Length: 207
Figure 1 (cartoon, helix red, strand yellow):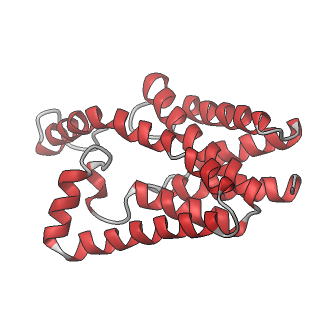
Figure 2: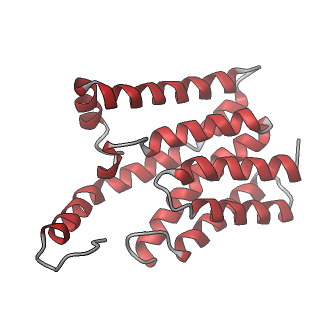
Figure 3: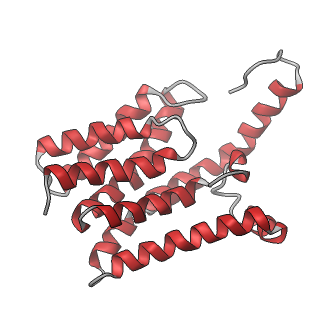
């Protein structure tokens, strides 16, 4: 979405080009985000502290790569070339969405009980891509939309019900997920959705 300038200004002419350049990669990004839901189930199956260790290593590696790509030009170029299918143009600065997601998963696993964290990770992995897909198709361009939030909440409710959570807990978790997904800061939903859902499940339906 362009802001400011006239139709033929440099600002308005460059922004659509960036959006068109990023659009082909959004499908890959959403697919990988959805695939990350499996991390919750895999972590739950690992014995002992295996889940904590696996998700902790993932978050540590992601943060290490973030530091390296911002401080070492060669690493920055390599990651930009390899990760162009999942990185958005605006993520050349700051923490990328995938790194925020890895940190969100680990923090959720650390702070919530295992079953709540696993369910929250599955919710985050599936609900956010659904919100993006529906929001892009039926919502307003350039920001969060009501349609996307409804999709996020709907997917969250289905996941939680399928996980055997009581209807009331599933409903509260779905509403909380939808609200967290609407966070206006870039990448914040990757942190907030799993943390919020994990907190709800730990409080309302501990196991």
